[in-house]
Length: 384
Image 1 (cartoon, rainbow, N blue to C red):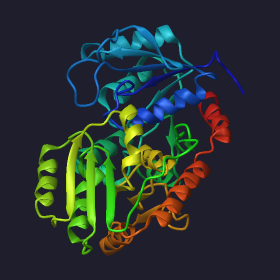
Image 2: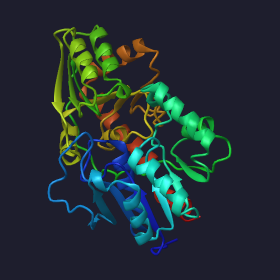
Image 3: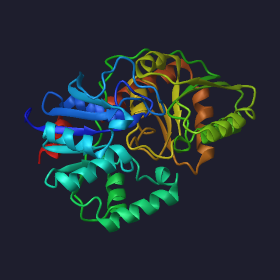
Image 4: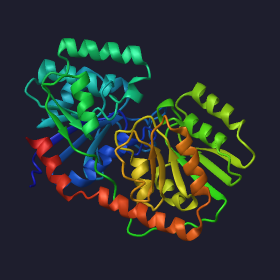
C-alpha cells in the first residue's frame, strides 16, 4: 500500500538534529525512515535541542527544509502559538495530525486547541510516549493527576485516536483517558539492524558497564549505583555514564553515592554522547546497565542488543525473555539481590561465555525488530 498524496503533519517538541530528549526523537525519525516513501510527512518542531537555549547551528527557521524523508519546520519560541499553527495547518492541509506528547503545552495542547476551534474534522492521532507509565506519573504527581482528571472531565481528548506501543500502554490509556477512545497498539519501529558485531574481549574479573540515558529519576541511575555499592565481588567494575543532566539535585544524589563505592568500582560521568558517536563506543563495553523505572520503548536498549551488547535492565520495558535468550536480564526493581547476583555472575564470565551472549544479543534484537508487517499496520493507523 502506498499513498504519497496522504499528508501527515507531525508535532514534536524536539527533532533531529537534536538528540538530548532521547526516545521520542528516535521514534519519529524511525517512522520517517520506514514510511517517508509511502506518505507525505511534515514535522513541526522547536529550533533548539532539549534543555538548550541556543538554536541549532545552520538551521533555517520558519521554512520547510528536507530532513531525511520528511519536510521539517523549526519554530523559534515566539512562533509556537495558535495563529502560527492555524496558518501552517491551513497551508499544509494534512489528512491528519500526529502528536508525540501528552503534556506538551506547545506541541500537543495548543495544536489540539487549534483543531477544536478551526479544524474540527481533522483527525488527531496522539502517542503519549510513555508519559502514562507509573514511573513517569510519579514525577510531579499532583500536577499531572489534576491535569488528567480535568482533561477527562472537559473531554479534551475526545475523538483523539491513540497510539500505544505495548499492551501495558493500552491499559494505561484506558485507565487514565477512558474506555471509549480508539487505541492502536503498534510497537515502535527500530533502527536498522547491524549486519555484524565487533566482539569485545572479556576476561574474568573485569566488567565494563555503560549507561546511556538522561540523568533523571525516571532512569533510576541512583539504584544502579546502589547495586554496584553492594556488590561483594572484588572484580574490577567500570561504569561509564553518558547522558544529559536533567535534574541537578538528582545528579548530586548520584554523585554522593559514587563517593561510597568500593575501590574496585569506578564510575565516570562522560557527559552527552551524540548518536553518531555512540555507534563507535559500544565495542568498549560488556553490558548496558539501565534499571529504568519505565520505558515506552527503550531505543538505547535495542541499539545495545543490535550491537551485540547484552543488557541488564528492569522489567519495566517491553524487552522480556532476555534471560531465556541468554542475552542479558530484566529484573524486578524490588529484587535488588538478583541485580547484585547477576552483576557478580557477569563479572566472572570468560571470553567464550561472553561471546555466546553477544551472539544471542544480536539474534534477540533481530528477531524482535522485524518491520515488514509493521509498515502495513502503521499505514493503516495513519490513513484509516
